[in-house]
Length: 149
Image (tube, rainbow, N blue to C red; front, side, top):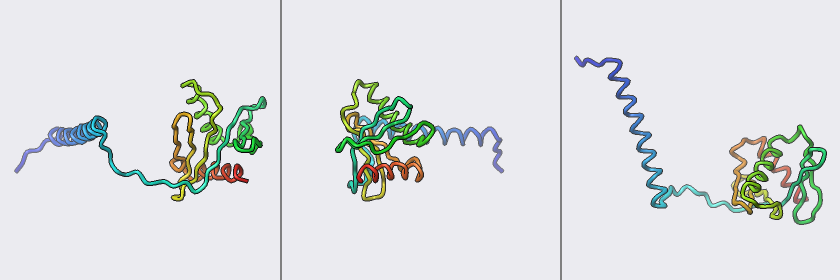
């Protein structure tokens, strides 16, 4: 009969967990230093896209402007459209942090896969909106439709 104390079992479990963590870190390090990466990129083809700029209004609203026509597309009033407003402000904050102005328009892209992304060509930021749930994707999909009409 094997004499296995609770401490021995706990130590083995901890050692196994630590081994998995060390292995994961080692794989990440090898990937970074060698440039080898998992080939999981899906070729995304844009189905629809629109360029826009936005600015803050004195009322606190965020004004979304079609970059092609200069037309005001939507006014996002304070207390509404929280995800859209926060995402746009986050992109603007990133530009400001690296000293980039608002001259280059942002893009909303809908891919043939159904994925929707918010892209900032000036900083290279690509926000995969599907990661934030269907309600938030719908908010940007509607904005894309309004920009296209």
